[in-house]
View 1 (cartoon, helix red, strand yellow):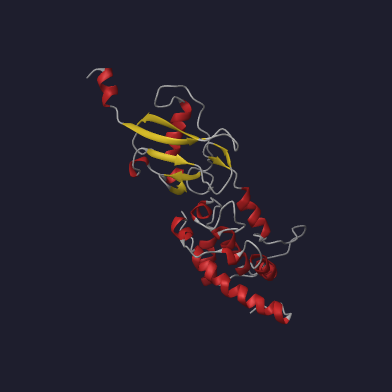
View 2 (cartoon, rainbow, N blue to C red):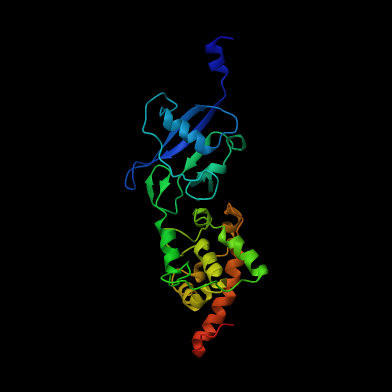
Length: 260
């Protein structure tokens, strides 16, 4: 078989990629074709396009821009919309995707360039709900209180959140016209309120999510729990927080911060 015949029979992968130079520029779709290799994922395909940035028409173009980090579904950086569904591109295997493979940025966040987005909205929400345990680290406090094993196990499930933003993209209530902080920050409220040391800020976190953009803006569509790549029980957390905020409302009314 000649080299020309081999090239003709070479299996190709077809892509439709949403391109945008910056936040204010007009978006457009650009088509690409690259040679197939076994065990490819979307990230390795994008790397191939970046290595040889020619579109389907044979025209040289700017390399596609996207975010990535760990390449093993831990950092959450490579989130994008693949064939209409928000997910991690590092675990999106080419063999399991229908072609042409359509890649778009998550629309919940402002586009930086192409498939790159600015997820500051999510990180600002984590700051808003104080998703950390504030302790004085200037001296040794000794060992902290232990969590019961049963609580530790479900808290571990909540701690798997990698702030990928997929649940916010899937949620119809998180958009440019809404201040809703979304399911990921809400679940982190439950996680840190359950921690023996983090509980000292429990009422502060609950009062925060009782305000504008908080728990009351959740429409209970349950898209988030279906989209979460880590299988975090987000709707279970939201249901638990509904109970906690109701109790906090009574404590506020009676002027008591004693935990239930």
